[in-house]
Structures are given as structure tokens and as C-alpha cells.
Image (cartoon, rainbow over all chains, first blue to last red; front, side, top):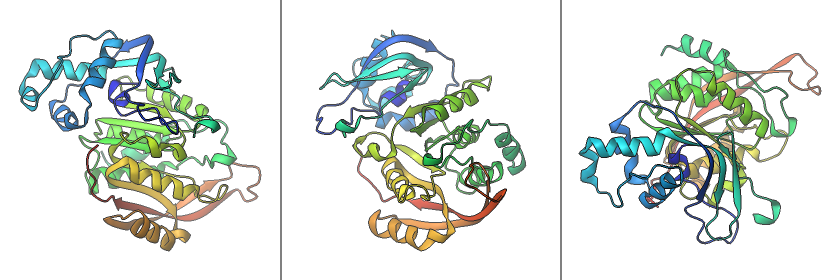
Length: 122
Length: 214
């Protein structure tokens, strides 16, 4: 699971109000090189919740993302490369996504998060 | 990529090991998958540079096709662990890392995933013959997950019903049948008496209503 995917997920248990962002418990992280596409990064940037990405990247051992960002930075190649790496090249292979409100753990196994809810959760 | 190349690419993708009746895990035929992908990628140019969700991805045929046609990120969503395992293996067959992630989730539970969205949703949903209304659940979920458009296959016999659902309930900006295809349903299950059965399906394109960003 890439952090682009993580950035879109929340705890969807019925009644949970602050289920975003899910905290990452990383057991195994892999890095895989991916083509650098600045146009795509500019396309996706407005939809990214930056604090969630930054926190998730740090939990995966990538701690060089700036604290705050602006549209102008999308012209800065060194920033775009950091953004690209955190968003698309770092994969959570084993671990868990944890709901910030309830502590419910969603297991990530072989890179695939399991967000199936039990009957009493939905 | 040409239609023929796309079709032969689809032929190489491993199908379900043991299709599950209750989930209507019919494999999408290579011909139908290729036609669908070709339409999205070439006629409408809605893969290149875009994000995609493949809802009910099964063994990831459409996900892999979307990535091959230039999608920058594809999320394959399925309920079934066994299907996702094969899907991941199918993706791992490729030397370069394809931009595909998978998520195990129930289509009936995505309503509260408000941030989960892609530019385009593609799907080959169950026809709703085993669990009535399953096709409608997929369509409702797809509208929620898409920013722009939804491509889907539905039995031609449900055409009027789908049109009404899309326009009245889901407020589609447009709902159009692009092609009618013959779905060669192989006798995957014991209760299928005939060797295989052709059914007619519609390839739909829906434009979702404009939405405000969350």
C-alpha cells in the first residue's frame, strides 16, 4: 500500500467522528522505484491532506517532508521529488492502520489493508 | 495500445482458482475486458495521467489494463481475500512496479469512506442474479467513489432500470450505453447445465454529478 492510498482512507465504523487519519504501525516497509511524473504530482496535490501524508511518511521512516506546503512549491523539483517518493514509492507491506478515535486496528498483510467491518461495527 | 494487443494481454492474466457462487465471480472475458479498456483509454482518454478505482476488482484484469493504458494510480477494491491474493500475484508478474494498490473492503461499507475517490471508476460488477440488487449496490458505490465518470457492465435486460437509477436517484449528468457485448459465460459452476451461455450486456458510461471537494 502506497501512502497515496493511505491518504484517502479513514475508519468507517458507525458513529466514529474522528476516524482520520489512520495511524500507521509499520512492521515491514518496502521502497520501489517508480517513474517520476511531475504533472501527475501537480494533478493530485490539491487532494492530498498534507499533515496526514507527513505523519504517515514519518511512521514509515521518511522524515524529510516539509511541515507546510504551498502551490508555489509545485515548481520546485527537489520538493516534487520528495513528494513523489513519499506518496508513491514507499509501501507498507506488513503492519496496521489504527483508528485515532477507537484504537481499532485494521491489519495490513502482504501490502493489502483489510477494512472489512464486523457486523456490530456497521 | 491496439485492441488486439490489449486482448492478448488480458488473456495472460490468471483467473479465479475457485470462483465463489455467492460473489458471482465470473471471470471477465479477455475480449470484453479489452473492449472496455480500449473505450475508456482511447475513445474517452480517461486513463492517461488519471487515478482509477476498480470496484470488485477480482483478479485485477481491469486494474492491470488501466495501468497499462497510462493510469497513474489504480486502487483495486474487493471483498474476497482469495481473489486479492491472485490479483497481487498477477501484478507482481510484471517486472516494473505497476501503480496498483489493493484494498479489502465491502462495497456496502464504502459509503462512510468520504475521502476515497478516483478520477474514473471501472467495474464489472455482479449481475445481481445470486444476490438481488448487488449490481445496484455497486453502481451506487461507484458514483460515490468517482470524481468524473463510471464505466460498468450490466445485463441488457436491466437497461431501463439502470437508466432510471442513474438519472433519478444518482443524478448522473449523463448515462449512456456505449456498446452491447456478448458475455460468454463459461460454465464455471455445477448448476450451469449448458456448457456455456451467451448473455447480452451493456457497456455503460456515466458522468457523475459535479461535487464539492472534501
